[in-house]
Length: 395
Image (tube, rainbow, N blue to C red):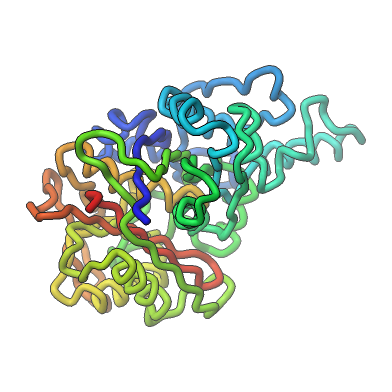
């Protein structure tokens, strides 16, 4: 069943709203990655933070207030009219919500625990529910008064990519007519210190697939699609296919040959009824860690022996963890809705001679003409969890 992606709300270090984010994305703007202190003791690290004040959570829902929910609300407000029309057309019980996250309100919970340690009581604004992984979907459902299926998927860095897959499944099972799906994650000390403990964080802007790569930058953001059974607009865009695998190689290290990644890409192509040479662009997971980039290079070279234009967008956004899958699928959506522009690959231009050479997108490059525009986005996570999504013109 075709799952149409009819509207997008988006916020990340590139900006807010599809037009601003697209303008910065296709210009290769990395100014949203900034060095910051206070996240990791005794260390300054580069992070992709959303700048400026966020909209406040409405007073009746103040117990659900967290930065994570504020980012989600920012994205949802951008498509408020489309959501209202869907509710009016289908009813509140036929609208579902499926989101991905890995942080939820952990930062607020951490501050509450610190306060408790100092004063033997929690601060007045502390609510345990803020840190529950279900919190973003519950908040969005409460804000919109929606009563369809509502849940969160948390599979680390594939969370929101799996949310899009799950949303499509809900539509195909006729459990709803519209799904608000995507992902949200906010910066928090627990995450940054955890990745630092793995020695996976770079102090400088990340440098994916370079011989000089030194690790990731962490970012934050939200991407929210309105997915529907019905197309909207003269040139409808859809989730054409999705593939997932779990190679369970290691709790944090990727399987070196890319076996699981290859499997996910092949499944996505098969479900979309496409061949590898139909893909006009590939958004790489591209975290700039030694092992992930090596694995993904081998996997991409295997699936695309003739090459495919590709790039990692993480030097512009940081790795937004549970939001990354939806955010980078959104970048493919923006390519299709903003003149076929492609995100350039930002790095120092020094390839790793141990890795297969890939076909990097250069500044100003656009999608090659094709009867059907098809773009793929990869997301890989701890535990060998792999997802590939294909976004393109609806058949």
